[in-house]
Image (cartoon, rainbow, N blue to C red; front, side, top):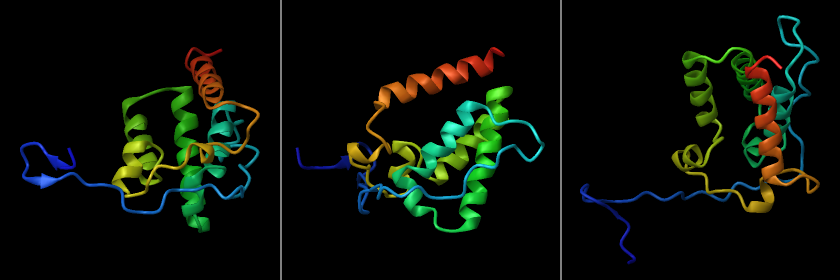
Length: 146
């Protein structure tokens, strides 16, 4: 039972070795500019996504202006994807989200342990499922032009 070998490879399964990500309560990064670089308004889903990053345990790892410029670029890609989904945009977004540990698999690859459940969000007023459903409603509306 204690053996963590990976079937058929003759090696042991890797395990995240870092400290668990922990949100320290600080909102990081700059405010999202009032409009996109092309002058268009940001979609609500993009604004929420940016705030989720700013208030996430992963934000603790984003320490430089260059890091936040990269997050802004990611938000532009997400905003474009919400307006007109496409495979190329999806692949680029996935690659950039992997670089910041946006999914459990990405955090594992980065050797970041999962955050404690109380560190997943910034506030107590909205449950995790409520945020997901609200965001999904925004995405659906953006995709169908509503």
